[in-house]
Amino acid sequence: MSALVVVSVLALASGDARADDAAPPRVEELRKRGNQAMLDLNYAEALSAYTAAIAIAPDDAALYYNLGRAHQAREDYPAALDALEQFAQKASPEVKARVATLSQLISDVRSRVGTLSVQCSADAADATISVGDKVSMKGCSTAPKQIRVSVPSHRAVVDVRFLSDTYQSQSARVAVEGGGPVAPVSLTVLAKAVSGTLLVRATPSDARISIDGHERGNPPLEVPLSAGAHTLDVVADHYDASHVPVIVVAGRTKDVAVELHPSTPITARWWFWTGVGVVAVGIGITVWYLVAQPEGDASTGTIAPGQVSAPLLRF
Image 1 (cartoon, rainbow, N blue to C red):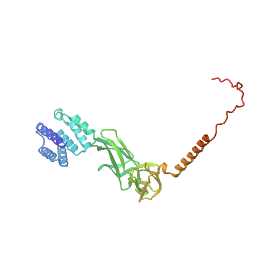
Image 2: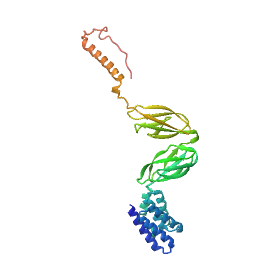
Image 3: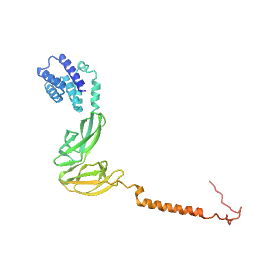
C-alpha cells in the first residue's frame, strides 16, 4: 500500500507542478523533499515538509493531497480524511481529474475513522484522555466531546484512559466502528482526596467482577472507589461464587486476591445420594407391597344396580 501511495503522490505532484509554474521556489523545494521522504518511507519527514509548504502556499491543492496520502501511510486516518477533503474543496476540476478514484479513496479513508463521544461525571480541566497509545483530548467535562480515532480494520475495541493530578477514573474498553455511529463513553471520576483504589486479582481469568452490585469487568481489575465500605462479588461458570466485603481508604490502594474453587458436581454431594436412597427405598417398598399382596375377591358393593341417579348437566 505504501508503494501505491508514493506513486499516487508523485504523479499528482509532478502534474500539478507543470500546471503551476508560478509556485514559489521554497514550496517546490519542500514538495520535492516531501516526495523523496515518501520514497524513503520516512513519513514523519514527508509530513513536516508538506505542512511547511502549505504554510507558504495554502491554496496549493496538490499539497493537501500529498499530505493526506502521507497521513494515510501512517494510518492516521482522521488527519488523512481532513487533508483529502481539503484537496477536494480546493482543487480545480482539472487537478481532481488526475485522481480518478478520489471519491472511492475518500470513502475508504472515512470508513477507517471511528468517533467516540466522551464525557465525565465531573469537570476535570487538568485531565488527559488517551485512546490507545495516543493522547486525544485535553480536559474532560460533563458536556460530551467527540474524539476521532483510526480504525485500520474498520472495527476495533479501544482502551480509553483518564489521567489527572486531582481526579481518577476507571479505564473503559469501547467497541468502535469506522464510518459508523458515534460510540458513547461515560467516565465516572472521583476526587483523589476522598477516594482510593481497589485492585482485584482473581482466578480463573474469565471471572466476572462486580462491585456494589455493578459488573466492572474481568481480572486483573483496578477501580477507583469512594473511601468506605464496599462489596466485591466474583463469579465464574462452573465455580463457586465469592462474596468479599472490602474497606477502601482515601489515597491508598486495596489489593484483593480471590481464588474461586471449582463447583462440586451435584452427583458428588452427600445430600443428593441420601435423597436418591430415600426415593429408592420408597419405590422398593411400593413395588414389594404391590407384588406381595394377594388379589382379593371383588367386592359386591353396597349400591344396587340401576339405583344410582345423577343430576342433569347443562352447558
